[in-house]
Every structure is written in C-alpha cells, then in structure tokens.
Length: 373
Image (cartoon, rainbow, N blue to C red; front, top):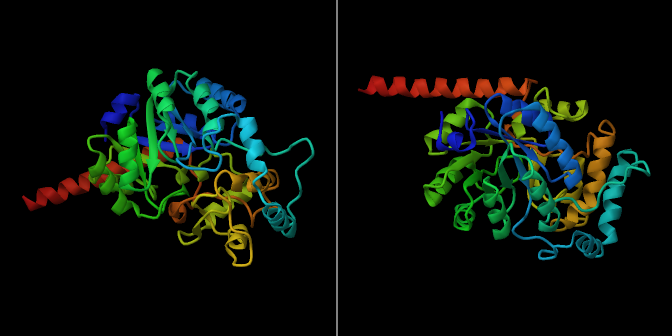
C-alpha cells in the first residue's frame, strides 16, 4: 500500500486523518499515517500552542488544514480588522435574533461575559494567512491543505518555498484541474457523502473522474471512507491514498463531549444532511433542530460565508460550553459513514485495522485472479 505520497511525506501508510484534535493528529502520525490538524477554529496564537504540543508528542510528519474559499463575502480585503468591521455591518439583525431564539428555546445558557466567541474565524484569506505562516514555522508540518477552493498563488509559492507540499479539496473534475494548474501537489477528491463541506457528486463517480482529469498528479480519495475495504476500492480506482475525517470523531483521543459523542455513535447513515445553516456553504452534518429550523420556509435564509458563521459562531461556542443543553442544536459535522461509527477505538488501532483490512481485500482479489488463470 506504499505509494509515492508515502515517500514524499515520509509516512508508512497513505492514510490521512483530518481532525480538530491535536491528540488525534499525534496518534495517527505515530501509527504511520498523517494526522492533519484543522486550524480554522484557532487564532494564530492558539495554533502555535497546538502545534507546539504536537511537536512534543510525535517525531513524525503531520499536516495543517486551512480554509481559504475560492469565493466569499469581502474577498480581496486582507486587513482582518477592517474585514470584520465591514462584514459585521452586512449582517441583518433578523439573523442574529433568529439564531439566539433557537438557542433560548432549547435552554442553552449564554456564554459568560469573559468568554466571548470570536466574530470572524479563519474562513478568509485575511484570517488564514497568519495560520499558514505559523504552520510553516514548525519543521514537522510537511503538508498544508486548503479545504475550500484553490489556494491563492502567493500562498502556494510560500508553502513551496518552505519545502512543503500543498493539497486542496475538490468536489468536481473542473475544480481539480484548477488546483493542478495552480501548482497544487495533491488533489483531494471528496464525494458528497463526506462530512463537512462537500459537493453533491458521490465518491464512486467522482474519484475516477478526478484521477483521470489531473493525472499524473496524485489524488487522495475522500468522502465515505471509514474502513480498509473502502480504501481498497479507492486505491483500485487509481487513488494514491485516502483522506478521512468523520472516522476520527469517535476515537478515544477525540476531544468530543460525551453527549455529542453519543449522537455520533447512535446515528445512522440516513441521519445526515447537507446544510448551509452553520457556515454559509453546503456542509454535511447530523440533522437536528438547528438544521431543520433554518430549512423551514418561514425563517431567514442562511447568509454566505463567512457571514453565516459570524451569526452562528456564538451558537457553536455555546454548544461547546454547554453540550448537554445544546444536544439538539449542536454543530455536528460528519459524513454518512457515521452509520458505521458505532464504537470507540484508539486512533492508532484504527490506522492498523484499516491497513490490515486493505491488505485482506488485496489478497482476496489476488485469489480471484488466480482462480481465473
């Protein structure tokens, strides 16, 4: 299962684990995969703390994922202070009031006065640039991934000049070609069944389309991968590895509150929905009272990115602070693979089990081929 990406990054298995939890990053990298820390929720100072911790807990490579959308409100403004002010003035009070009403109706307490949620996170170039700069200060960070859109040329050049690789997610072959033409080293093709921000094309259709469109640029298959069998299917189509995310929400090391963990463990594959209700762009998550409220006909339509999260960031913060009270309105990004995430395992064990199941699938195919000769 060793591919060219393993040699480029110095990893044993082409298993990439996107997670917002530093413990999971270290555990996956220590097990031979590549942990990738989602940085969108951190300030540059907070990210520095997280990466320093990871540096102390693994001697293996890891990655960082940022969000610089190809299109968003306020695009082009690189002063984060001015951008936040301009964007705040664009938000209708109706949206703020509606979000707060949902929380009040569900009995979710307000945040303490000394714990104010940040208004603008790293959903823009202005706020993501400092995250990239901080990531490049850490020698073990070998990959910077962009979750939405093609990274700006100057950021790609900055990452390459630092001797690191650039990856970018896509939901169509045309997006993949734009990534390749911009100098992206690894294209991540994420099918619509994946968690978080996705397109609407299924993985089995999308993967070979993207692989063919950008060859010989390596492609990681993403969307609905939670086992070695699914990994074997992706590799059989020509993928150079797999990008996984939802799978790591129910590992022992995940920093997930018990009530939220329970929601994931009990969910079926039919309990997810693509909704713009938290971030402003289509994002797959567990369906709950929050997603249903924003989908109703007589309620405000979600705003674009990053405006919508400037409305809902308070709800996310209150959900983290009071997970039991917010269980029916919490932000639970996850893919359809959640139906198979029904037990808690250690992250390192997940990596090894995926590799073993992948090898078992390969052996089965070899036996089938042998019978045919």
